[in-house]
Structures are given as C-alpha cells and as structure tokens.
Image (cartoon, rainbow, N blue to C red; front, side, top):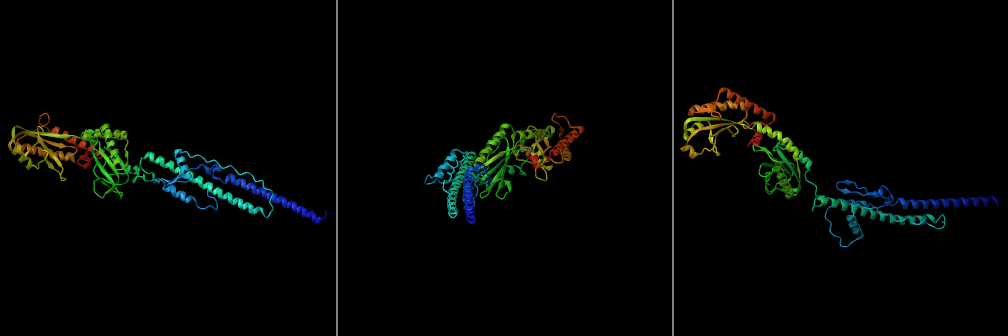
Length: 459
C-alpha cells in the first residue's frame, strides 16, 4: 500500500469519526431541547407562581428568543379582568378550559407531551445534514411556541377567574376591580378632627367606594340616648360637618356618638344599637365601616365619666322672705340687677359670650311667666351657680355672693342653705374653696369651665 493511499484512508476515517460525533451532538441537543424547552418540564417555571402588582397576575412563562411578544395581550387581559365579560358566542376549547379551572381553583400542572422517539435515520453525508436539522428544529420550535402559549393562557385565565371569585365572595354583587375604597379606613381612623373627643365620643369611620351626595342626615341617636355629629370628607380631602347639600359629594364620613353627658355613660346596648345604625348607613351609601374597639372605649370612658360626675355640681343659695314677695316687685329688682326672663321660665344674667351665667328659679321649681309675675306673690327664690359653666369660678363666686347680698337687702330676704339655715362666713369660704378645687380638677383634664367642651359634657 502506497503512502498517499494510507493518507487518504486515514483522512476518510477521521472524517467519518467527525461526522458521527457531530450527529451524536445534534441528536443530544434535540433531546435536551425536548426535555427542557417546554415550560412544564421546568421545576421552577412550571409552578405558576402568582405575583400581584396593581391587581395584575403574572405567569411564570419564559420568553424564548425569536418569539413574538405574546405576553403583552395576556397582561392587558389580566389587568382589565374584573369587568363582567360577555358570554362567548361559541364554546371554544379555551373557554372550556377556563370554566374547568373555575370549578377547580387549584390549577393542576399540565402533563408534558411524550418525548419524540429517537431518530433511526442512517448517517447523513456532510452536505445534507445541516439543512435537515434546520428544518426539523424550525418545526419543533413552532410546536413549542404553540404549546407554551396555550399553557400560559390557560394558567392565567384560571388564576384570574379564581381571584375574581374570591373578591366577589367578600363583596357580593361588585366587580373586584371597582371595589377599591376612595379613602383607606386606617388613614381615616388617624384623622384628628376638632368636632370629636375620643375620651367620650364613640367614633365610627365610613369610607365609600364611589363619591356620593348626602341625601339626608341619618338618624344615629344610639337608641335615643345620645347626641351624634357626622363629619364628611369632600372630594378635595377637606372635612366639614356633613349636610345634605346638592352638588356636594363625599368620599368618607366620621361619625361620633357622645357617650357621656349629664345623664351618665351610655350602656353597652346603646352603643351596640349605634353600631347597627351606622352599619346600615354604610350599606346605604355603598361603603365600608370601621369602629373603635368598644371594650377599650368603655374602659377609658368609665374613669372620665366618674370625673365628670364629681365636678358636675351646682351651688344653690336660697333667698326667702318671712312673708311674701309680690311678683312684679321681684321681677323689677331682678331686672335692675341684670337678670332677664328666659324662655325656660328662669331669670339669668349673661356673660360676654352671651351664655347664661347666674340663674334664678322659683323655690318649688315652677316656671316664672309674664302672667304669674303680674298677679302672684312668692315666698322667695333660688340663685344657682353652675361650677362647670362659669370660668374663673373663685372670682365669679365672689361676684355671685355680692349680687345675692344686694338682692336680699333690696327685698328684705334671708340667705339660707338647703336646710333653711342662715349662711355663715365660714360656709361661704368653704364653698368658694370647693368651687376652686372642682374647676382645677376640670382643668387638669383639659376641660375649661364654660368652654364648648364643657357645654357638651354638662348639658
């Protein structure tokens, strides 16, 4: 055998080995692509993990090089889901799959198609193998894209349907995408409003799903035993006392029931009834309600009510005659001292703000009237000093006593206490100190005598 022939044989063997190795490599690549190119064969990407961002649900689909952007329509569909979709004219396979996913919310993993049988083709020559491989790979790529697209759409549609059902079960008859409150309840509960005092106002917070006019003020009296106020948050974020004004839309309300007054602390039953009323109001306004914890409120309100009961005192001094006082004379002397007949049948002086200060009533509690004063005589009358309603109590009490002494001298009357005993100087000093102590106790609780807060609590 000649040397050139040996070289040709060696080159032929070498070429055959290279071709065989190249064929084995291509077959291995096809096998790997069939196994790992499909999303359901990937342990991570096939698990359909849902990630929520602005109400959108994203699938775990992997983007393949050369594939058209098919995820965008799916994301848009998920984002707009929650609107009621019209029934499809025909029952498509995708629709059937979505209905099946709705009945079974837990999305089951789709089984992978069986791997194609290994090729048993004979060894190709060098100039034909690349072309056949390209053609086969193109066909496999088309099948892969179609399978992944269908799997991702089924998964996303099933997840959307499941989430929608969960939303509607929590808020019946409303689409999930439209159930976002205009104001967050937690933020609303942190608002500090000048009309309420959390020490004695039991608060409820109502946030609406859409702007609403207040057609009428609700009746929220706490079983008729308490006063309430309702503040509304307008669409520009400002709070005002809510009124049924045409064209004014509200997005939230804060409702406060005054649980402490001169009648005492409201009962559990009264507050539960108030909760029921507010819940009904929230449903009528298409909103949600949040209440302050009732047991915490009552626990904090109890000692505050005890303080109010302790300081809510009225000092009474009685001016009596040994005979009788003509009604017209009594009225004349009272009016000369600054008293004015009130609608409730009492006489009263007024402070600079126009509020009643010192009050005169009959001894038996009947009302003074124009007719009775003109024709009736009286045994005397009582002068009242309300500790909670008169500022600077110690100084004002001195003025009050000076006025009583003036009236007693003008009508020849005696100053006596509740037991019809003449008043002593020591008694007056003790009463003055008592007034000062009670008002200092009020100030320590940030209740200024005669203020708007005091008027609310002691009326």
